[in-house]
Amino acid sequence: MRIMNKLALGTAMAVGLAATAHAQDDKTLESVGISVGLLGNPFFVATIEGITDAAEEINPDVQITAVSADYDLNKQVSQIDNFIASGVDIIMLNAVDDSAIAPAVQRAKDAGITVGAFDVSAPGAEVTVMTDNVAAGTIACEYIVEQLGGEGNVAIIKGPSSSSLNDRFRGCSDVFAAADGIEVLSDDQNGMGSRDGGLQVMQGLLTRFSDLDAVFGANDPMALGAQLAARQLNRTDVIITGVDGAPDTEDALKTEGALMKASASQDPYGMAAEAMRLSYDVFQGNPPAEDTKLIAPELITAENVDEYQGWTAER
Image (cartoon, rainbow, N blue to C red; front, side):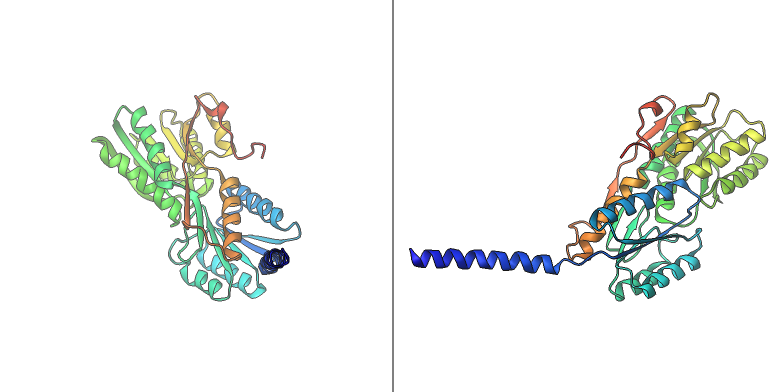
């Protein structure tokens, strides 16, 4: 009996020591740096909120620094270097260029900083959480083809060279290419991911092409800018779709006579929060089995917008 008691005591002590060691091994999350494409886009405001809430669940005293790259690669590279110099624990990155950002990401990793990507991929990031953007472009442009009855003249407004926008462009392009009656009049104009950019591109498109039937904007700000340009030029017969499911898009879809007809939705808050949680696991030495997580989009239209749980829904 005495031997068994000693064995039990030894086992309990070993378990206790292991638990203590594990607790001691856990690193405190002290600081997180966030760089997003454009703070003027409410999508990125929601991602910052998601990251902040997830990080504060881990440590209420964590220091959060969020900056806007304004879709400027050099500016974002400088921001990453500043995060490295300040010694943040984790960098949460919305890359403005899905390939040229690689050296800056590698510098951060070489400095022992965990890098998590959200919304777009970034070479070298340890985790990535984003919408299935090929699917988003696909469903938004399938809607256009369906509404046109398979025949018509269309255009695509591109954005900056990020993986998300490029994937949406690819998904949409494949849909249009597969429809024999669809002619793509323009697909090389960059709306810079903004409403002003979409407005300017659409003004040019409508000036050049009087027979334009529909336009896909690779994000909602560009699509809403295109809608404004069409209204200014008294075009009421153009079908416009986008990607995001933004609050302004919800309002547009609920407005009678809106040219913005559909948007493939995203969940910026949930996406970024999940990326933060997975990045923290990596920070603790527990990388996920899969380093990329894709979230399926849904098509939001005037018919179902009232059931849509959007970016500002209760969390």
